[in-house]
Image 1 (cartoon, rainbow, N blue to C red):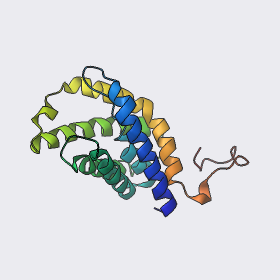
Image 2 (image 1 turned 45 degrees about the vertical axis):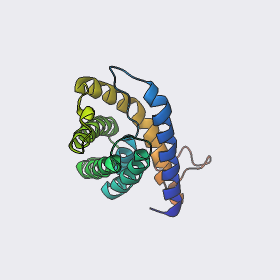
Image 3 (image 1 turned 135 degrees about the vertical axis):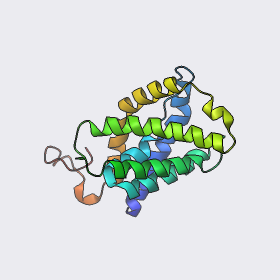
Image 4 (image 1 turned 120 degrees about the vertical axis):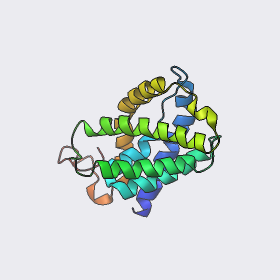
Length: 179
């Protein structure tokens, strides 16, 4: 990943962490709020492979750990595992398939929240497993399906290189590019 892409990914992660810690926390259904943070490593892995997904997941998770009252490094561990696993699990699938992003977002988001809760309980946060997992599944699945496309566009922009960026003149050509 180039230095420019690193700065862009950091910008996108910061923006999504701000939205997560302000807007998403105020939306509660059944005591559960949508998780936007897990879409960062999922979309990075879908766009650039397992290694990039793991790296982006680790650093965005570490940034999220700074504002969470959970054991430090827990989000980084889950984000790293999520990014790598998503990249490996979808490696053989056509990345242009319409169904891939929503399905990966739902499965990855729910799995990450459950892994986060179980690991939190293992590290002494017993209250993390005392939630309604059915509500968690429904809220995270619905929010992941709705938010994966905008997050994917942001991450596509962040991970793009100068060689495949679209300009206003080339906006109607080919499938490559950020838009």
